[in-house]
Image (tube, rainbow, N blue to C red; front, side, top):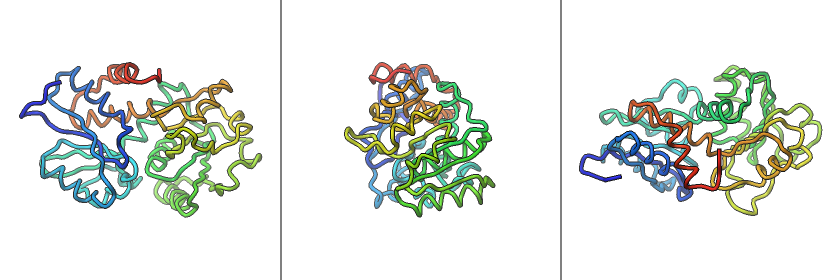
Length: 287
């Protein structure tokens, strides 16, 4: 890849952001299609978020992805939202259209494509257990509801955030079969008698030694395990693998949500196979 005076800039805002693999597959896709774009990581502390968003306009960047912890907070600094972002109140992609910033959320669609295409799992009529209540959880819940899941159970360390997510789902998405499980009660046996898929939307598992949040005896009852952490094989995924439960890590979702962002910025169909191949060559994880 050659950086020239004409090269257009895209990237990702996050804190931390050193673990991101998005530059690997996005730049591979740009290079494969011969597009004069580059994708860079930008570590943005929460107190600098407004200034960072203004920089998109100042430097005339094409757009950025947005990751933890900015997906909800960044909305107040964006000029326009697509319909999905309006409903979910979360943004993970920004497109600069002649100085006007439009926000999108591609996480939900990326998750569903990953679950169905790579995981071969249809969530329709299934019971979902979600750990976490951050921006990713909002997007994932929205996408699951669009696929007609039966019910959603939410647990989160901060109870109030779980309540906000539940109320949002019931009010904005008109989906009423949502139950909050107090974090301290998340492993109670009766909860797991009907759970089909367990989804971790938190950063727990990114570091070796992180606590396993769900007991093994409960994990073995589910039909699918999805952990959106992608920088390592988490303890949750190791147990799913040992139990021979179908599972996915976050790399699959990362590629598909990134492919949608790529298409928003470039107007061209993303070369998903090339994106996956670049990660296979870079990472120990295999699809």
